[in-house]
Amino acid sequence: QVQLVESGGGLVQAGGSLRLSCAASGRSLKTLRVGWFRQAPGKEREFVAGTAPGGTTFYADSVKGRFTDSRDNAKNTGYLQMNSLKPEDTAVYYCAARPSSSTAQIMAAGTYDYWGQGTQVTVSS
Image (cartoon, rainbow, N blue to C red; front, side, top):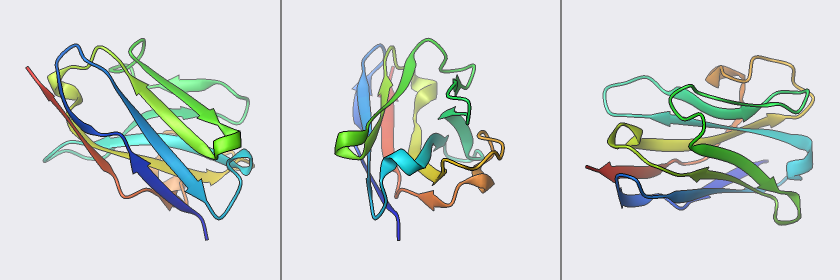
């Protein structure tokens, strides 16, 4: 069974940075495709970043140029580097994973099989 454990959230001032980690266990990250989502209070869960089967990483327009998705297969961990944070980035952030063979739409939360517990990111103005 795949488990995803997130860490790295917290409180930061606008303009600051955070790096979220998503540690996978139970399966090699090499066989998984990781996506990042977030959910703000009163809003639906939304796509943040993810890599398509061809290897291209896509980002939500709202985070493009500020967030970077990466991974360290040796550590079986994915990362989301978040720079130039804004108050509107405040949300619970989730990492999700699915088999790398999947060709389903990467921006659809329902296409991911495994989810982390979520980590709170709060950006103060």
